[in-house]
Image 1: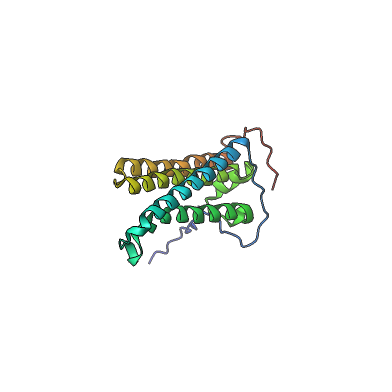
Image 2 (image 1 turned 90 degrees about the vertical axis):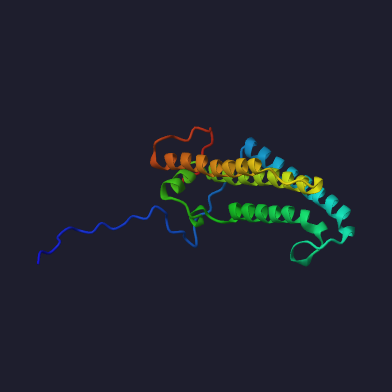
Length: 189
């Protein structure tokens, strides 16, 4: 019986193991990120006000909706979900070290090189896109129309690109294929 002398290659995991404790990397906010954040919050406030207006108009109808609740409260679900998403994202970005975020090793290294600017960009883009689409859905509910499938597909494609493109650039930063040229000097780790 011939013995197989080939050494088994250990599979290299593409993701780093998240650490429970890590050095907090401050996120460098630029005027563009501040503007995106302000627009997102303004859109969410408008969405919340619109949903409250719709709910106060529809609650007296006493039509049974999902889960046996009054159907007038349905427009309030999207702003609540969006505020929870926003709070979790902003608290996570603010207080969790970059070492605790699970991402590919080269993307993580790129995030360190750009001072987590790209991570903040990704989260703000997702927040802004969700706010716009949730407002569109609430308006559709108000006028009694169904949201268009094409709009939902464009939203999903925009979400995918909002994550893929900045993370791809961060991966290139981490591998040393490109250099960070935003005029921001991140702190070294």
